Amino acid sequence: MKSLIYLMPVAILLGSAGLGAFIWSLRSGQYEDMDGAAQRILLDDDRAVDRKDNSPA
Image 1 (spheres, rainbow, N blue to C red):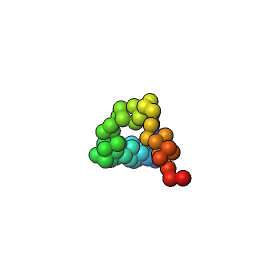
Image 2: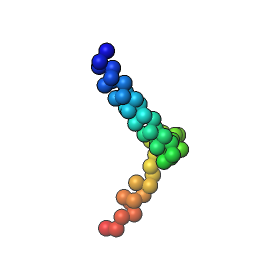
Image 3: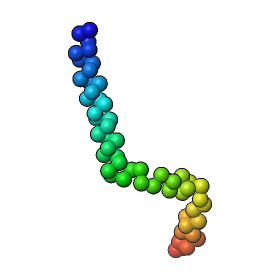
């Protein structure tokens, strides 16, 4: 039972740190564009091919 004296504040501290990190990520815009990165992977990037063709010789 004496270990609860140490474990409860540590659990509360870690939980509040996790909640603080989650709230910070919400406010900084981490979850604004959830579909953009997934769609960018599926689309072909033709711009990379154009850069190679238009490079000076």
